[in-house]
Amino acid sequence: MDDTNKHGLSRYIPEAIKREVRQRCGFGCVICGFGFYDYEHFDPDFVDAKLHDPNGMTLLCSQCNQKRARGRLSAHTVEIANRNPKCKQLGFANEMFDFHNDPITVKFAGVTFYNCKDLIMVNDRPILTVLPSLEPHGPMLLSGVFCNAIGQETLRIHENEWSAKTDNWDVVCEGPRITIRGGLGDIVLALKMEVPNGLNSCAE
Image 1: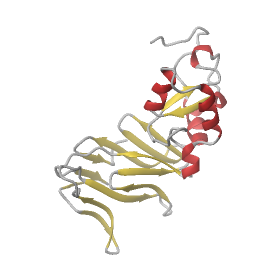
Image 2: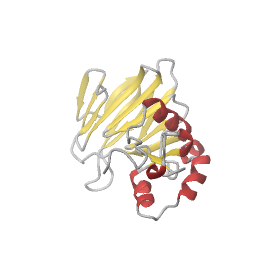
Image 3: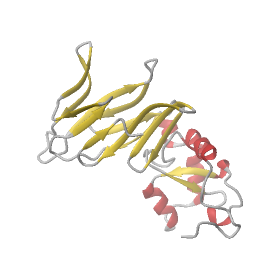
Image 4: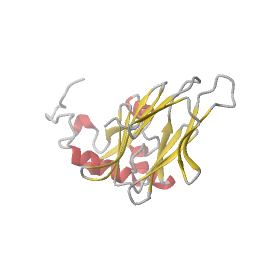
């Protein structure tokens, strides 16, 4: 894959432009709402683009991006979804964690939890838990709620499905990492998936 297109435009997208696209799209694929995404030029396609114009860019998950690349998803459909992103409709971007059915390890605030049911309790109420699946050979099930310093929910996990709210200032999902920011330089939550063994919250 060439690093530049026919107009000499680099594939590198400045961080400020990527953030503008993420915020407008609600931090997930505009078609299906999945929280892991690629940056897609659609108006025009990257091959014809002369600059990284955030108004002609959007977020697509790897599956929808492959549909675009293989001619099964049109730029017209992407443009329509870009006007009304799925995540903005739902109020969150979401996807699944992948754990095995053995006990998992969760690292949080400098503490390592292994084979624990209630990891964090507040006023006798569990806010981060791990339970075995009811299905034979099903994965361990992680559930919990993460909030910022003033108590606003930033990310919720229900039986391995995580949801990041679209009213966050920024949510970056790259590789195995999810990073939520409350502003420039203000990391509210940083998670790294260590599949299939667990999750590390001190991974930024």
